[in-house]
Image: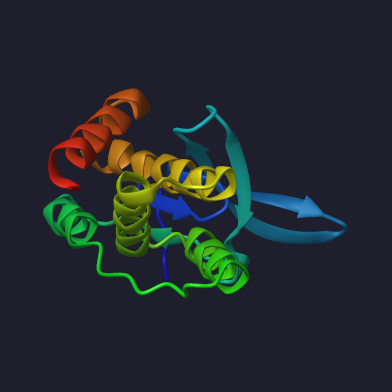
Amino acid sequence: MTFQVGDNVVYPSQGAGVVQELTTREVLGETQQYLKIVFVRGDMEVLVPLRKGQEVGLRHTVGTDEISQVFDALAKADLSLPTQWPPRYRAEQDILAGGSAYDLARLIGVLAKRDLEKGLAATEREVLEHAKSMLSSELAVVQQVSLEEAAGRLETFISERIT
């Protein structure tokens, strides 16, 4: 996968951001190329070794033309999770670690429905909030809006469409 300055990207552990520059640094006597990514969550910058990008899960964001499909995935909430707690929690953590917009949307939909039906334990509420935060960061970058505005749009959609 190739990345260029100006690309919208997702680094699963941090959320979405924009590649600000491609730089070369010498670390431990070895010269490497790095992507400087500025993230919308926390106004943080990270240097990611170009050759390790795929290994750490770095990917391009969804396109603006895919946003409606992401919201459709959220509304359908067609994700199958284990019923028992430990395997379900591991599955949820795997989805968060993967950082796929579609999987995050499905997870949010499932957890939001479960919250309405019978409530969520504190641990699963944290998973839901983390998933919302990750998806909001991607929506903010793709739609070129603030993180707060993207999170507000996501919350509005959830409140209107999840029943």
